[in-house]
Amino acid sequence: MKRRIAWIIGVVVAALAVLSLRVVIEGRAALAEGDAAMAQHHTVDAIAAWETAARWYLPLAPHVDDAYARLAEAAKQPPFALVAQRAIRSAALASRTLWQPHADELAAANAAIATLSADDPDAALAGGPDHAARERWHADRLAGDVRPHGFFRVLAALGIACWLGGLAWALRRSPEKRSVMIGAGIAIFGVLAWFLGLYNA
Image (cartoon, rainbow, N blue to C red; front, side, top):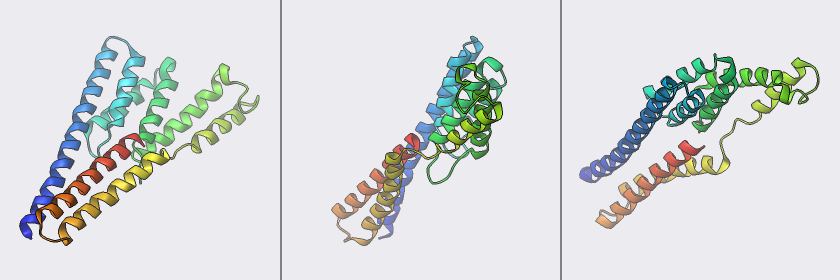
């Protein structure tokens, strides 16, 4: 029994380790791509790459905070302020599941986007002729669009359920190898589904 438990835990930990490694590798690669683009003064390309790096979210992964810091610096340049703030917002929303990582960055980006959009001459009629009214109009719409896509939210929840259910199956069923394999397979599927839902939400 102990060997079975240890084997199942090892499989799940290995799957999580592989997924985490993929996130870190892809995130660091996107961060480096953005740095290279910025070195060539291709700011828009750099912002897009840094947004990708921020989307490769993993708690405590340094490339995520570095990506947000670079996007915040890009947002200080007036010609690129709006696109950078939208990139921050998009990345923060993409990493939301049952909680909202980088909630402060999201709130600041929403406020900045509302102000910048109210100043945009191409959107001057949205919300009315008054600047404050336009800013409120944009802020209300940004605040109302903060939930992840329903399908991927359900997929992430299903992944957690399969992960736990698979472990329970493997631990409580008969000691036959087939039952253990089925439970481990369900648990691994759950981990993959959770990761997919987390990344795409």
